Length: 233
Image (cartoon, helix red, strand yellow):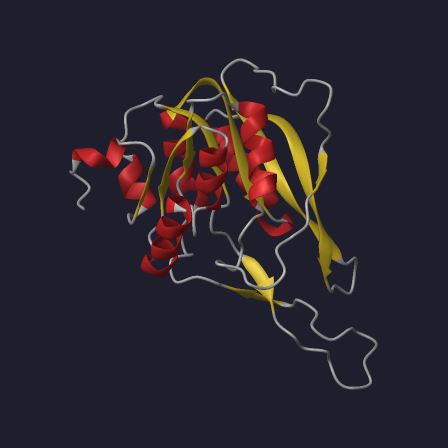
């Protein structure tokens, strides 16, 4: 499929495309909700600084790219996701501490307003010499005027959903139930949920289970193939 193909704008699809180029072909304000876990800088490693060190084994120490197509700038895609979102709509963007400031700054540059900083408590943790990391952050943004979530008074800022341990289809795969929680709060049946970095399609699966329309792009053919099968199921 080429970027000039009109099917690029059809919903209920996952497409093997470069999302930054593909979004430029989308009409402005055609999406009801953005939920995405974009590629960003991570840390990994396993040095323990010698056998006599008090530092736990497996401490995360070095910046590393986990994916072939990870070297993209937040400023390259943030303007496009803002443009294609409808007025008075929400965006949920996963991030880590290393990228939180840049992600927020770039989102505000293009016009997003910060509703809240959400925390996903994963119920597992990563070793650290400071504090062990057992959560991820989610920027809860809005475009235009404030829009209430559907579960008014019932949803808190810290969300406990078990992380997927083993048998992941993607290194940073998110639980479908967590994604359904966000989608249910910020959209209605029939709305279009968009994920420009959809990996193996968890956001799309969650949207489909909630009777939403969905659209996702994934540039990596291996993850795209898995995502196609998951969405079909």
